[in-house]
Length: 337
Image (cartoon, rainbow, N blue to C red):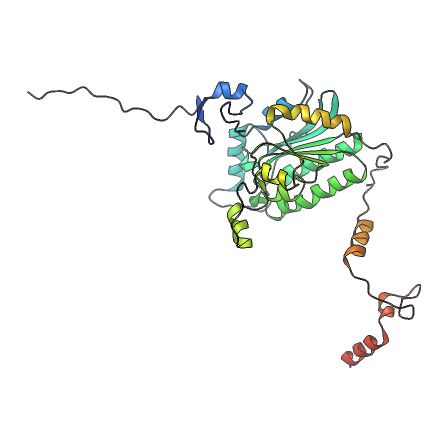
């Protein structure tokens, strides 16, 4: 008669994903409820996990002071983009997973009693990619800050521009930068908070244009990936390249602040960064930013002096062609003949 041996269940090396999280820095297994109480910062090594937009807002603003605006904005599939799945299906899946309409939430709130205009990004929604909706929310947040003359705070967490929207996404870089330039000219402060990661088109546009640029510890911040950067310059990258501490040492970031100290740091900055009273608010919807004057001043700095003498300088009412020296004019006529 064969002997029946007792069976043993294999030992489980994995922890339930909904109960435990493994720290990528120290490999410590962290109980999710305790991790949430610690604002998703590892108590062993201090690693900062990514934070949702709602949790970020609750961490920074005064209790029940946040009033969301433009909650109904939603991306459309203007290009009919399809890769492994259609773009509308990707949006629907991200909305179901995060409970958000798009990758950013904007509104007004108060921080330590200071009223601010805010826009907070969430990396969980399609990698925090910036499409037309995110760009519009950032722009409207800046415009409201300009209209009410209150500080602007943007918390970035993004992999860059959203490829499914093509040029529509890339145009958000110019739109957001233009809005921030109007804010700067009007003397309204802008505080930029960069979390892990802040890369691509978001980094290349509004994320690094703050009057004060703050970053969380060990956050990935940069335009292109490390492998692309190393291949472009054909050199080995230094240790910690594109991390917030590296950028702070090289003057690209003003402060590296831990998550628990971030609210106090921003509140202290708001006490110093007061909108300038010497700049009037826009009148009848007209912007204080003069693009023609800006380009003219830029051209004066970049374009070298043409070296025109008094004889060849254009007279009032004459165009630039009148300022061409006689020798060049003769050459031009000979070419035409």
